[in-house]
Amino acid sequence: MTSLKKTDPETKSIIDSEIQRQSDVLQLIPSENYTSRAVLEALGSEFTNKYSEGYPKKRYYQGNKFVDDVEILAQVRAKKIFGVPHANVQPYSGSPANTAVYLALLEPLKNKIMGLSLAFGGHLTHGSPVSISGKYFKAVPYELGRDGKLDFNAIEKIAKRERPKIIVCGFTAYPRAFEFEKFGEIADSINAYLLADISHIAGLVATGAHESPVAYAHIVMTTTHKTLRGPRGAILMVTEKGFKKDPELAEKIDKAVFPGLQGGPHDNQTAAIAVALREAQGKPFKEYANQIVRNSKALASALIDFDFDLSGGGSDNHLILIDLQNLNLNGAPVAFALEVAGIVTNKNTVPFDPMPPFYPSGIRIGTPSVTTRGMKEAEMKKIAEWIKEVVDKIKDEKLPKKREDRAPFLKEFKAKYSKNKKLLAISKEVQQLTKQFPIP
Ligand SMILES: *Cc1c(COP(=O)(O)O)cnc(C)c1O
Image 1 (cartoon, rainbow, N blue to C red):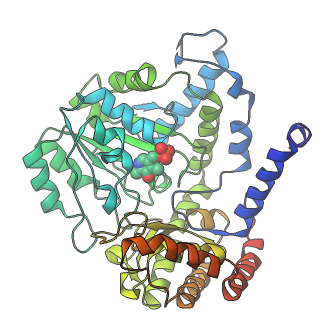
Image 2 (image 1 turned 60 degrees about the horizontal axis):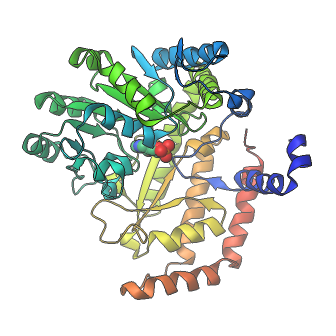
Image 3 (image 1 turned 135 degrees about the vertical axis):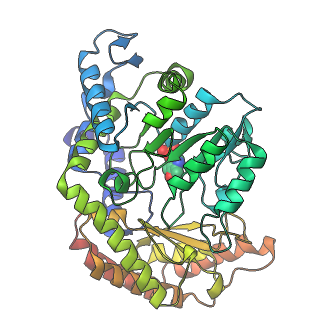
């Protein structure tokens, strides 16, 4: 980055620090990943200079021959990988992509969206009251069963009672298999659209490491930057089933993305999506996706051996949700202590969490990033040991029951543990390991 160094050493230095951080830590946030250098090069390309409102061959600006080429390339690859007849690669990210689906199909304040409630692992854009999806449309959320798994009796009951126009099947903190077929049957029984939001598991779906929703859903949305390992972005796909239900579905969705919700597409992002999809077609990526799942299962089983309580009882995908209630610990201090030890996670609510989202009872972790670095089952065991050591170190730090005491407690906790010798010693061990597995 020689030009950047000359023009803006201040920003360059911050970027360098972030690269160092990403390299030093064990990155376990399941929605993150490390893209390839090839993806970064396309993302940093001159396509960022272009305006290309519209779609290939139907633009509002001149000079789009090569933008058309790259957008068509991305579309063709997406259609091939996921086995769908239509793909729109323009959504800026996952949230605008879901919003575009609602804009395409729902009447504001009238039609209903039925998604998993945020507190149980749905996404903000699945009808949460703080999101446009819950403010401009009627949300009729479903929850998980007491066992932390999808409860199809309950889901069917709500669907039959509320008759939502869209059912969303897709999650941010669900460690088990996404059962698309059952959602498809329920959606069909009330003539609803099924939107499969595979943002978290797209890389697994692309390679067969997780079942595909394409036979059961009408619309499939995925972000491109999680297990798919591309740039930030999203793809909206219409399936054969979707076309059968509504021959104009693709047209409605395209119109909702542009001009409904967005202006000019980010062509540099489109180019980088094309590259990521090229990478996802290869054998190494298939092996990568399978290893993500093997690593997640290995990490889950090692954690269970240390008596951690895992929501849903284990992991079928890339993700694990640790429920800390049996240890009488809270996600906020635990996530902080883990970061001091070089292990980056996020605090997360667990099903039926008695605590609010800022002080949730869980920790969410996942294996996509560490698997990109080449780590395998042996390293997962080591990671579980470190997590156990960190949690043991702070096992007496109970979050106060009284609401008003919590913020002061957390502040004091951070001051006390940010330079804790034991945690810093673990972070040194972590660095010994991460050094052996360089980031791309
Ligand atoms: C990440 C995610 C989104 C939103 O993606 P952004 O790119 O952050 O807007 C939507 N749905 C699910 C299930 C996700 O995991």
